[in-house]
Structures are given as structure tokens and as C-alpha cells.
Length: 338
Image (cartoon, rainbow, N blue to C red; front, side, top):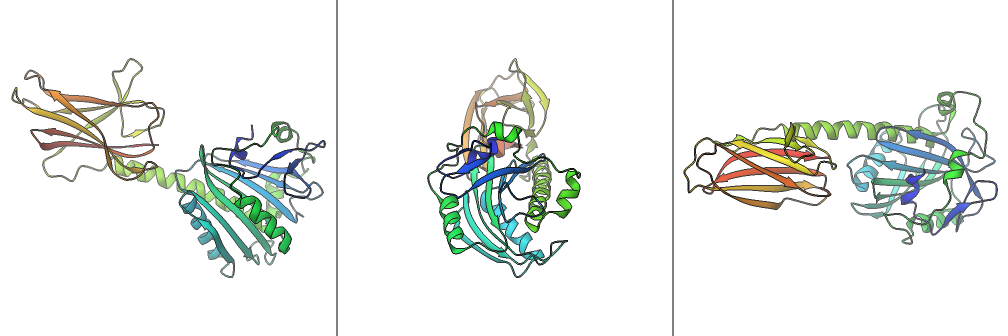
């Protein structure tokens, strides 16, 4: 159930007899305090068993993100948003690459009902099997040198991998929180929560915005007319279960394993050399590259070029298909896979 812990980078975490979470290398237990789910992210918050959302001193938060953005992009976006609201925040990158970021910041608290509350956070954003995973340890007003060293080591550890590590038996704890739910509605609790929890909500909203922006960009890219003079637009179709062309679209999913390209060309000479070239233009698999090239023996009775691209696990990103006749490009089609 708690697959969002797949990116947690500790050597071992397990349940205590009381049903709380124990993390090897840490002192004390953690209790599940809140869980929020949106279309683009899942956020789980843990605090010490004796604390509450309104009175915590230590917080552990884990977020699974389903947005096609790299960890470095998310970290920089988070930093920029935080500095916009709280310019005196001290932010430091301890590790920074496209797919793995270890950061630290100290904030005096600059807005909301909890303005002025100090907070100190160490977090890591790395690439998980389903998208970026962010885990952060926060303390207020500030971590002791011992706590800071401990969590830099825990979160910066190379013991785990982006594909997961051994956190065991957390399902039961997720279903049975160690502390009773508050009587007040959760919205009221969140209004009274601390600056850190407010920032988590801001990040969820920003991820939603990024997802909508990515969809709009993909749609605009796919619908863009070819800019090469004299070329025509190739029609793209999702393959049916029987292998035939189906729905016309330029926005495909990773579950689509067959994509048809169709271009009416009219009458061509019997000796025409017809080629269909499929390109990966950019995305999670890197920069532009030719991925397929097909040569068609031309039937002089035909008037349409038809070809398909098939794969078992397509990469997300931007694609292009071209039709060439006797070495001249006559048609272009663009599409995205998300």
C-alpha cells in the first residue's frame, strides 16, 4: 500500500511492537499523522508519537510524484518558491544532478498564522520507478549538530537505490495510525498546522500546475504543423487489439504499444523509393535519435503510405515520423507519449 516509500534511502525501516515506524540509525519512533493524495502526487507525513500536527518538533515527509519532471527541476522549483515567500531562507545543495538532489535549508518562517516559526529541513529528491520521490526530515526551531549530521548521513546514504530498498511491513501501520484522528475536520487541522505542512500543500498545488502545463505543452507540440515547405501532415492512429489502425490522435500513453502512421500520396511511379523514418526527439531517453527506418516496395496501384511503430515499453517523450519519396521528405507527423 505504501509504495511511496520505495524511494526512501535508509538501510532498514520496520515496525515497532506499538505499530510505529523505526528507522535504523535514528533515535525513537515515527507515527503516521497525515496522508494527502492528488492526481499528481501522494504525500505522507510522520511525526513523533507524542506530538500532533499542530505541535510537532520533528517531521518526516515522503512524497511520490507523478509529473514528468526530473528531480533537479523539482528541487529548483521548490527553492524558488520558498525564496519568493521567504527571501532570508538559507538554501544549500549538498548533491545536485538531474536525477538525484540532496538539499538543506533554514527558514525563519515568513507567512501565514505561523509566521516567525523557524524551521530546518534536509531532503532528498531522487528518481523512483514511477517518478520522482522526495523524502525530507524537518525540525524546529533548528537541528542540533548531531541531528543534522545524522540526517545528512541517512538521507545522503548510497545504501538504497532509486528502484527501492528494504522497508518492511508498513502496510499494517498505514491502515492503523498510532494516534486517533482529530475531531476537527482535516481542513481545519491543516489551517492550524505549521509552516512546513503549508509548504507541502504549496508543493502539491505546484505539481498539479506543472502537470497541466506539461499536458498543454504536449498538446501544442503534437498539433504543431510541419514547418518544412511542401510537406504534408501524417495522420497518426492508436492501434486496435487486432492490429488495425484505430482512433486518430497525437497524444499516446505508455500502454499504447502500436502506433500507425498514414499519409495519402496519390499516384507514384512503379520504381518509387518510399521510406518511413521514426525519430525520438527528446525526453526521458535523451536527445534526438533515429529509432526505426522502413523501406516500402511501392505498389503502383496504391495511393497511401501506411506503416506502424511497435514496442513493448515505449519511452515517454516527443516523437516524429517522416515519409520520404526518392530521398525527398513529403510528410511529417509529430506525437507525444506520456
